[in-house]
Image 1 (cartoon, rainbow, N blue to C red):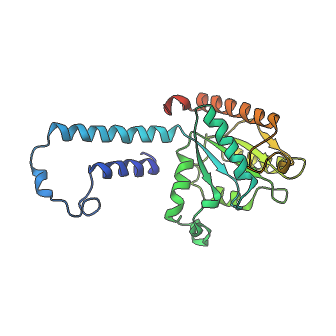
Image 2: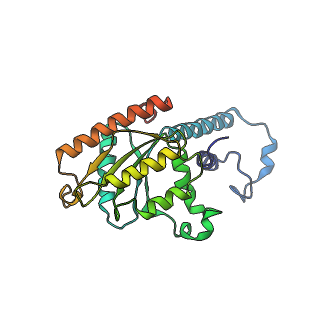
Image 3: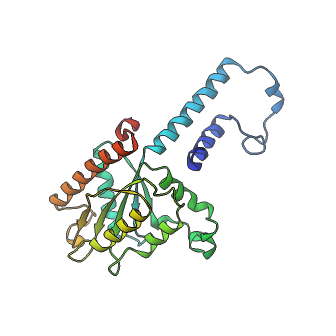
Length: 250
């Protein structure tokens, strides 16, 4: 069975081309009488092209790395660091899919979400399941993982969200340890969920001194460590999952 996110995208492509769409959903005013005539070669070719486009979207989804911004705090340093990480992966020709917890739908915080997830949460859940690997950027709040990040993890599909999925961590903090404690806590959680934890972690202590007014990292050593982690994690994912992340984006 194909992942639901992929099926949804494939369905959108079909709808755009007018293929396999029930009249009541895609074309309420469509005259169905013409469907009784023979299908032309041009129409068959259009259907094939649509299916190929859908298959390509699904393949890209399965070979995408997803970055999780581990807080919903407005204007957070975590989001600034995440943008720097995005740029590093982009320079390596591996663009990232970003899940910012600040964009979580308000409905997910209803107690009923434990039993039934709101529609607005579907893209978050599916983007994790469809990812070849995950990059988690986390701050340290009160010596621990941000509550919103742990809650997000608890809301994801079990066990498929993390089972045998590569994951790496970037930690940042205002103190001298650079989120060592939350990263180790996350390693324990992801290890429990049978994820493939990449051993190369990056910590950013005293993060306020590492960012300029535009949110760019000024410390060349930190930039180099993030780049080395990215190169290593890309290789880690490609070998474990049997994919070519750079080739699939061409």
